[in-house]
Amino acid sequence: MKLNKGIIYYPKNRKEQPVKWLCICAHQDDCEIMAVDGILKGYYSKKYSFALIETSDGGGSSRTGEFANYTDEMMKEVRIKEQQEASEVGRYHSLYMLNYSSKEIKDKNNDEIVKEYIKLIKELKPQVIYTHSILDKHPTHVGVVLKVIKALRTLPKEEQPKLFYGCEVWRGLDWISDDRKIGFNISRNEKLQKRILNVFRSQIAGGKEYTKASIGRRYANATYYQSHSVDIYKMISYAIDLKPLLKNPNLSVKEYAMTFVDELRNEIDAVIYE
Image (cartoon, rainbow, N blue to C red; front, side):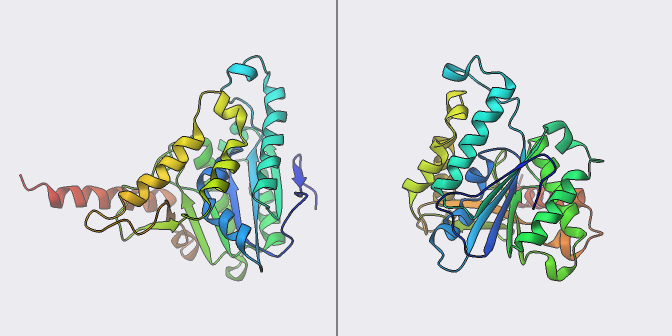
C-alpha cells in the first residue's frame, strides 16, 4: 500500500492480529488522548489489534525550552518520531501518518484525504472507529471528523464499522445527557497511559501538560459520572455515538450536533424552576 505523501510505520513489537479498533485523528498525540479505550483493548487482546491513522504534518505547534528555536520542518520530524515511539509503547498494529497541513484538512473541497481514509479503511476493515467529536472546538479536529464521515458514507453498509465514536479532546463531553454519552471504563494500567502520553515531549515542553490534563480528566469523569452513587470506575473517557450519521446518510451533521445542545438546554430549563 502507498500513501499520497505520508508514512507507513510498523512498530518493531507490533501486534500482528487483525485490526479491530482504529483511530482516525488530526494531530500527533490526539489518539493517545482520546482513543485510550481502543489502545488498551488492542494492547491486551489476543485476537485483535489497534491501528492509527494520523492526518496532519505536525507543523505549527507551540514550542519552548529545548524546542524553542526549532523550525516547522524540524518540529514535524520530532513529532513523527514521537508518534512512532507512542505506537511502540502501545504495541499498535500499524501507524499511517498522512502528512497533510491543517489548511488542507479544513478545506471542505479537498477530497484527497477522504480518498486516503477510504483506501485505508477498506484495507484494515476495523469493526470500531474512534475519531474526533463533532462537538470539538478545534477546527482541524472538526475537519477530520467531517472527512471521516464523508468517507464512511461512501462505503457499503457491510464495509462500515459496527461502532463509530466521536471522542473528547478540545471540549469535554461530560455535559452530554447521560443517556447519550458513552463512558469507556479505562481504569486499567494507568502507568501505560502515562507512558504513552509522556512520549510527546515536544508538546509538554511547549507548555501543554497533556499527560496531567488527560489523566485528570479521566479521573474527573469517573467521579462526576453519577451524582447519587459511589464511583463505579477509577477512570472514564467519553464519546458520542456517530453511527446515526451512517445509518441515515441524509442526516445533517450540524443538525445532529445541535440535538446534544438542545437536550442540554432542556435539562437546564427543567431544573431551574424560577
